[in-house]
Image 1 (cartoon, helix red, strand yellow):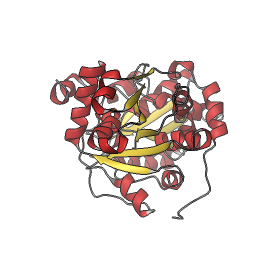
Image 2 (tube, helix red, strand yellow):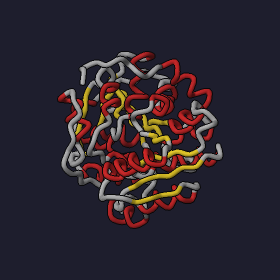
Image 3 (cartoon, rainbow, N blue to C red):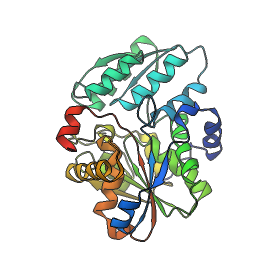
Image 4 (cartoon, rainbow, N blue to C red):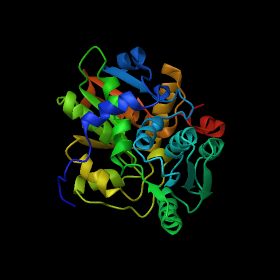
Length: 321
């Protein structure tokens, strides 16, 4: 893979997305957490993406993708750990299209239930997301249906990038934005707009220590698969990177960090106690990375995105309470 491929994403289309996406998913709350800011000696700007019917940011990119899809395409296939599938299911239902979602047998049962409640046909295959994805690709080919891949389609990333427009409405310059990294759609969309509109703002990605393929791929400038993954952060538990997403990432991402499950749980508890928000593990990795590397951020205005809130009562009891 070339170090710098042709940039596929457009800040102009990010702006277009902000005018097209269902307002239900836009202009989400963002605010300074005074208590955490004081404790860490930073100015911490939190972007809350959990207050919508799918409890995550995934409604943005899936809506923009579907708004650019010909009406003749009436049936789609995807693979998902849960939140992407929910976003696509919610928006395909609105447009009266059919959706089949492949998820692993270990997927969050709450996310499986929500995808089905939005009208998706859900098939569970394999022990991780990437096995489910391979099965989904084969299924789509055999059925001659469109396979939608999070991280690969530019419209999905550009829809997610509308978060960056909203972050930049904050009254002071943002020194850096710390972003969870799964398949790369979120960080690439945000990075595309930030590097255009606020080039001095650093973009920092975060992966789970036991799901490091995106960090390894970014460091080595080539797709690096891992044999296994083991993290509570199912939303970013990727074993096989999307090559197109990696090409997009190189000119956009300034740094990548890793956080352990213990650090993630600590950040989840802090968000619950200090901010009153219950979020899923992947949503807390940005704060976890800030807390683990606080000397790097002290004195700065730092933003992070709380990407989702799909968490079962049993998980709340195990990880937060």
